[in-house]
Length: 342
Image 1 (cartoon, rainbow, N blue to C red):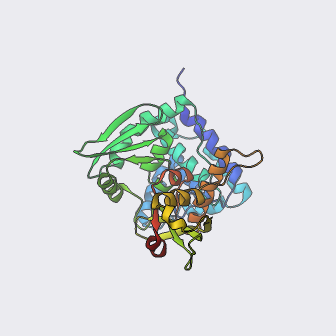
Image 2: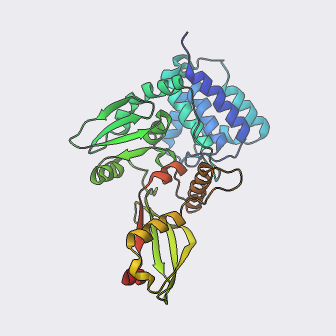
Image 3: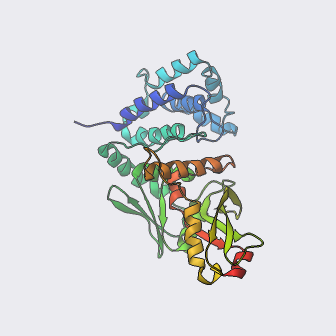
């Protein structure tokens, strides 16, 4: 029996629409939940309306026809009726007749647009293996179009096992992740997709520059902890400060943790036995997840830590998934006073 995963995702998406209600944020610039809902209904029932809105040149959220439908859905009753229309079967509904070929990737991406938006984004879902395989099969074709501007080769590597070359080049970058995460990355949700880029630094940089976030959208490229020592340390004791920052691709640094540090004391002249490597290792631990306590596990503490840092970045209008932050390079920079002591 042929399973149409797009239909399963349609009902799951409708349930999430009902759960978040009108006025909820999405990852689509300028759109709230009712705008996204109106888009999906129009795409299926009156696609020519979307074309006319695009011809108008209006900004997202100000489309003449779609925004009128969205305004009508801003009330609880109007919103519920539009969700029902998304599930309806009346009329031609050509994309629904085409099934997974037309709807699967569209519904999966926009479902995550709802789930991962706002100050408390939801973690990635664990979809059925067969559904992930269906996403992968559809993804491979559209990926070639998505990376067409890349000056380097691109290989998609699914954590479920398969891989495929979508752009050939002398040097290549590998995009590694679950099929859904790869889909989000290729659809421009790079800051919300748990995808690892593997390759030489120059190759990865070239790919990011060509196929990275939309213009004006900053991306976190690494983490840095700046360590220094009090102005007047003694020979047998010293207090260290550790400032943890996210470095963006435009060179800016966003402070993540500014209240961390530690103290060292011991026999006379502790500096004779202290090394930069030891300081760096301690700094990484100090700005990392706290130790588990009570019924919490190490993984619980790590998850909370990275979600907290992702939340700090959101307050600076920088969107990045907690799992992406967790895998970024983490450098330690030694301040001038400490460098003079080591």
